[in-house]
Structures are given as structure tokens and as C-alpha cells.
Image (cartoon, rainbow, N blue to C red; front, side):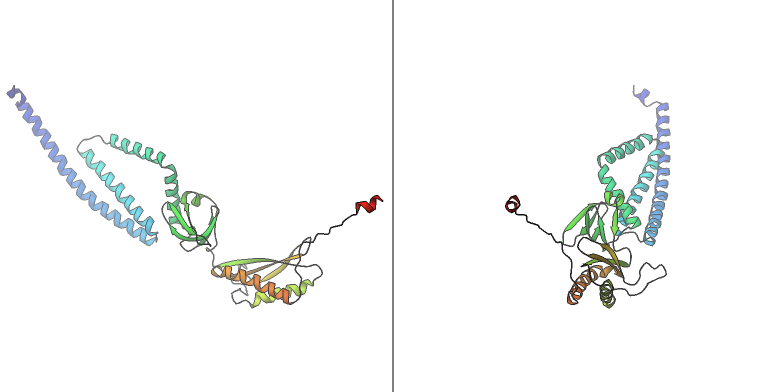
Length: 287
């Protein structure tokens, strides 16, 4: 029985298997050595490319990690195939696991994809004042899954990046200048030219209001005033003036206060709704 087990054919098969295994092991070692060097080289190239593109730190570390994981996974599959192991089953296993994870984390993956898009294309940056998803505030932090903003009253709002990247968003800090639109009312009978001149004087005297056209596009221009509408109780005028984006709220509140004080001092009356009530004495009418 022992002779049958350790027959010359068995030794020959064992020798062939050992020779093939050693050969595969040597090839795998060489592939691992070369592959590891290539992975390091590719990683360095990716890092340099991301540094040149000035990617956000959070996205930078994530992308470099993803590249390393994918490259090492490919190298592992190649080494497994060298030993004659069928790799299609491993690939199918990874694909099915990825699909299951993707279905279970569909909302999270959507927020992740939105975060990548925001960090890559930069529709807004940290410090910008934005309005989105029903909230308005200054961006404090941009994470992979969420964006954190601080509202004017000091509240912290966490907005998922999925809806933020696909929905409508207003960035008030994107442009260097911002237009301040104000409306004022005064009673009928007032001299419009006098009101216009008085309000324009206030706009021209404010140090933060831009007094001339900035460039050839005529987008940022000198202060302007016009008659907007004739209302039920008074006349409404609209003013348009430009300032730096960072000075918007300072100019907005200052102009409102200054124009009100000026119109009041010059005797212009502000309109208010009036209601005329006629009382009929039913008893006298009956008699």
C-alpha cells in the first residue's frame, strides 16, 4: 500500500507540483516587487497632480486612499491568478458586495458623490455666504458627506451634500461686488425731483458706495434712482447702488437709516394706509 502511495509517478507529480509552485512563487514575488514600485510611482504622480489642482485637504486624502486601495486590489488579483486560482469568482464577489453596499447606502453615496463634486468644482468655498435648501449662512466647513453653515443668528446647520450639489444654490460671495436695492415711499403731492435729488445725495456721500462704473460691462455702475410704482397711498421709488460684497449689509442698513432721517428732516411725509369709515344713523333714516 505504501509503495503504491509513494510510487515513482507520485514522486514525479509531487516534483512537478513543487517545481510549478516554486516557479509561480518566484514569478509572483517578481510581480509583487515590480507592482509595488509601480503603485508607489503612480501614487506620487496622483499626489503631484492633486497638489497642482489645489484639491481640498479632505478630498485629497480620500482620493489618494482610493487610488492606493484600487491599485493594491488589482495587484492582489494578478498575483492570485499567477498561482492558477480562478479570479472571476473573486471579481464577482467584489462586484456583488459593492452592489449590496451601494443599495444599502444609496443616500450616503449620493451625499458622498455630491461632496466630491463640490470639492472638485468649488461652487462655493469656506467663508462664502450661501442660500440653499431653505437656509442662509456662512460656510464653515465642507466635508465629504455634509456642508456646515453658520446662520446670522449663530445657529449651525448641517446640509447633506447630495441635495446641495443638485439643487438651486445662491452664492452671494462669488462676485466681488453686490448691488443694494432699496425701496422708499412718500406721499402724493411731494416734489419727485426734490426727493430724487435728496436720496441721490445720500447715496453719493456714503463712503462704501461705488460712485462710478467699474469696468466696460456697465454691470457695476454709479447710484441710480427711479420711480417704481404709484401705489394706493403713496409713490414708491427704487434705488440701486453697488458696493463690495463684504460691505453689503453695512451699506444696506446704513442707507435705510440715513435716507429715513434725511426725508424726515426735510419734511417729506411717509404714506400710511388710511381707512374712511362712514357711520349711518339707522334710526334717523327710518324716521
